[in-house]
Amino acid sequence: MNLIFYLIAALTVAGSLAAMLLKNTVHCALALTVALAGLALLFLNLDAQFAGFAQIMVYIGAVAILVVFAILLTKGSETPKDGVFSRSWPMGLVIAAAVFAVFGWAVLQSVSWLPQATPAPTVTVEEIGNALMGRYVLPLEIVAVLLTLALIGAVIVALHEKEGAE
Amino acid sequence: MTPLAGYLLVAALVFSIGLAGALTRRNAILVLIGIELMLNAANLNLIAFWRYGPHPELLTGMIFAIFSIAVAAAEAAVGLGLVISIHRHAHTTDLDATNRMKG
Image (tube, rainbow over all chains, first blue to last red; front, side, top):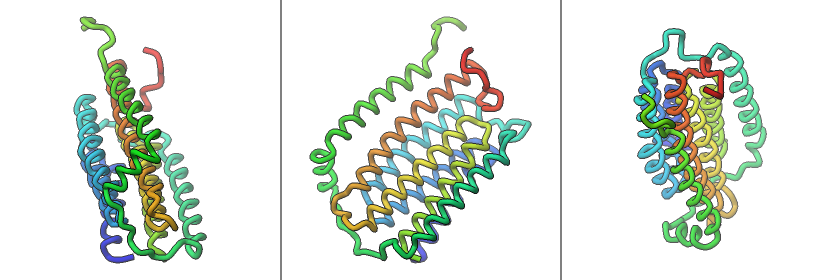
């Protein structure tokens, strides 16, 4: 538990709080980018370099851009006049606080069983590639099919249903 | 406090913030952002347990997190496509106003 961890953790939590609390939707998307970058830094801090850089490429490079495009296409950047929170927001807040209380209680109860600091594992990209092509080749193929289907499905869902209807 | 407990607490906090946002925001895109935050918190748990687990050389947790990132990207693409489709039909992304599934 060093200073770097606390700094990155504070950045991540502040980014996610801002993403959920800000009024302007574009600002929320930018705050989401900060939170995702903080999570990528936490991955790097955990010696998971490959996962950290995959997180940066997939989330900051693709998902954040996709979210910004969706916001601009749906005119979501206009702040609604009757507030950004749903009518039933106290119930949602209570549920989320209860979930956090349960998680925090579970973690703090099990602190004495959790392992202490261990030496950093050295994982090369070659080992990850061998694992993906060897032991995990079936999930890799299924993910490939899933990504193709999701791509086609997203295009079909967002496509105009009636050509020339407007 | 062990390092693992710190990571688990951060992940729990980010998950709860995402859950609160997904349950309270009106804009459908913000609900999707909340779901992305929850998925990322779960990934942080997987990586943290991989790092401090007894056999990090087996790569189990990290490979699981990488697959989870891929599935989350697919989910984001389909979800945002659905939001754009809803906006085209109902001319709003306000979830309090979107209360019909058909036309």
